[in-house]
Length: 240
Ligand SMILES: NC(=O)c1ccc[n+]([C@@H]2O[C@H](COP(=O)([O-])OP(=O)(O)OC[C@H]3O[C@@H](n4cnc5c(N)ncnc54)[C@H](OP(=O)(O)O)[C@@H]3O)[C@@H](O)[C@H]2O)c1
Image 1 (cartoon, rainbow, N blue to C red):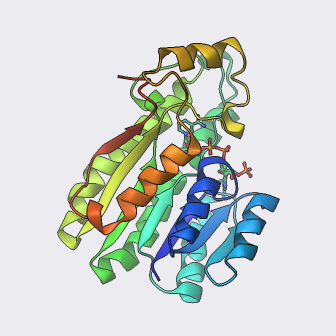
Image 2 (cartoon, rainbow, N blue to C red):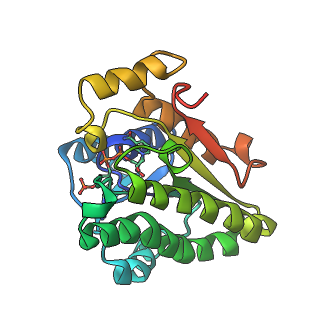
């Protein structure tokens, strides 16, 4: 059974991906800040293959110990999905410095540190998959999301160089860049804004968490062993 460590597993895209991973026979090592009934249900349905670690990625100093604990309990990790992120929005000029700093810590520093420690077991295995969840905002733009956008394009840059570094060991590193999906993160986008985004997309709808999760499963599969250093945009055609 292949071990997949997924962050932000308890809600939204992370939850849907965890469900699909469990169904597909992976061992799911989910890490998130707040436990949810929905994730608990997935755990109950797959008692031997779905696990939960409560951790706040703002605590970057604890990441090394977290990885040590998980690998001690479950063995080497095949796949890492850096999915947890916060989506604080706001006009830069009036944004609190503490919000800027949290965005950088949770969305950039934490996934880089987590990847640093998890990649060690992948290097020993000489195989592995790393998926960094970016966003179309990292390459397009949206009023009020400049700092969030900066964190998401940082991950794209991280993906590209790390793919070069780890490729020799048959470890792939890719970015999944979703478009708008209806989750907690986009709760604030209501009515007109959401309708506009739908109208502008090729398919006349938003991307769904199922669209995003299906792409995660493809990237983790043997069929995708030859694809690295790239961005998979899953946005119902919003940026076409
Ligand atoms: N939704 C969209 O439209 C959209 C579009 C493009 C990209 N994305 C990206 O897709 C990914 C998933 O987003 P989503 O829409 O599924 O968001 P979501 O519904 O808010 O879920 C995010 C998950 O990450 C966890 N998380 C957040 N901060 C954390 C922290 N400091 N430590 C540990 N866990 C933390 C959350 O836990 P808590 O409940 O405790 O906060 C939650 O379980 C993110 O990387 C996001 O940037 C989303």
